[in-house]
Amino acid sequence: MKKEPFDFFRDHADVFLEMAFRADRMEPLENPDAEGRNRGQCGDTATIRLQTEGERILRVGLRVEGCLHTVACTNAVAELVEGKPIAQAWKLSAEDVIAFLKTLPPAHHHCAELAVGALYRALADLQSRRREPWKRPYRRGPQEPGSSSPPGSEAA
Image (cartoon, rainbow, N blue to C red):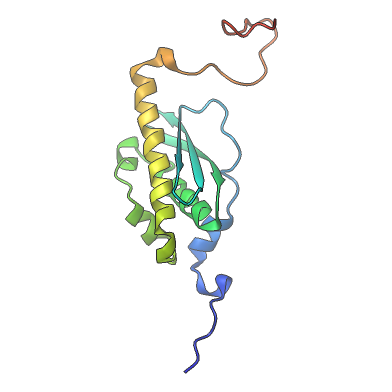
């Protein structure tokens, strides 16, 4: 009995394909409340930015430099925590991401760990910024007319 070759689009679950090719969260969030970046041993990097309101995650922004498996896992993390309480996001595991995607190959389970690690770093950054709000980075982007620049940013 001859085994048919793997067909990426036919053999992956629809949810995996959606997460692998979804790009709407890849645009930067303006003034995120937190950011976490994680780099895997494979060289892939996932960055997760959070916008929150009270104890809820409103929006998740992503930046992924890596393979489609890392993109799928990072999008899955965003899908699983967006709109949820922060406390619930802390409970997300790589196994949850793997189960959600259904057809993530075992050789790429480390991509789920990478994405969840980026989330944990973003959540830790959120805690730190809330504890020490004076350490929050200055807003980026064009200054409003008539506003003053942050100290030390004057042109020489």
